[in-house]
Image (cartoon, rainbow over all chains, first blue to last red; front, side, top):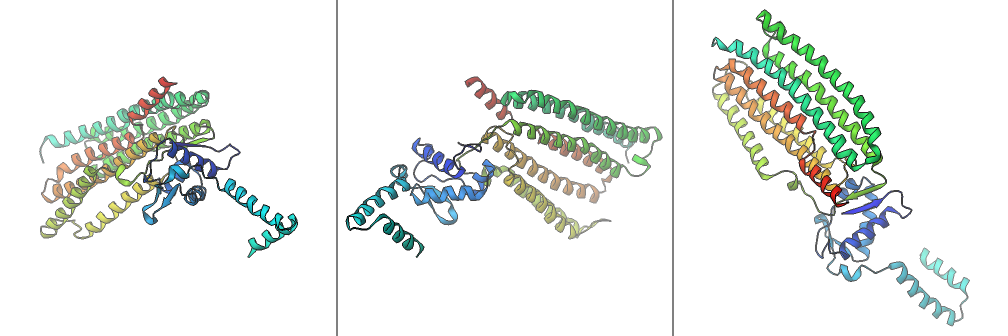
Length: 122
Length: 283
């Protein structure tokens, strides 16, 4: 069972992501287990289906769950190993290595920032 | 017609009044107070004053409606008995149907009382919402035995129509009955889909409770569908085999059963109370 708090400052989709990860960690959900449909979970929690869809999308990106088309979403076979993947942390550390490389090459911080902005807008 | 039949018809009407306007309302009210006190206040102790106030208002409205309808229907039946006429000086079949429709009013009032009560619970449920991570499918709500029963009811209905198309009686609508069958099935399955997808149950504390309640509502709805189909088939047989005098008995018993089932759908399954008390003990 998962519980979300509507009054919590933490976004609802993030609460959902954490609760589902916790359920996998506590072995309430095992690799290959089916997850409730977006519609079912949204109806049970009386929240917008888009919020649940966003949580599922993030879990899928981190390979915690996998979508099998019309059959629904399932716990990823490698979910336990992927539970603690934090994409923000990974991005930060990877970018730090790259930024150090650019600084060593003599680029200033504003040049690096501009280059990133331009590259992102392409 | 047998001599005892008119008397038995009056007895049947009195029985219908007693069952639908005394016994069922008393039991329904008892169940409502049970939900309010043993489920709601147990779960949401801070709601006690609000729930009791809501219950006091509801009690007045409910018993006023029951008393009013009991007087109207009682007068209808007593008038027929003392004057030896059919109900409303018109037709017993229609009269029994009107008695049923009037008796449904307190059931509808009770539905609104439940809705109001659970709106109150919801206000005290706090900002936390819970859900089960178990995948549910329609098979969790509808047992195979019930589907088989509905299948049999449909088959009996179709077989009855096919038989009476070849052996028609006056007033038999022929194949048009099959269209009626489609409409009845369509309406009931639309209600099942509505109940299955419905999400106005946040007043129930636990997701398992919501599921148990939803499951029972769906099953009672489908049971009423099967009973309705069997009843229509039986009515056609009674009419087609010149036992038309007994049609009133079949009709009245059927309507009483449907009303009892409708009222029963409003109560909470025992498992909900058991889980409540279990978790209370664990606290």
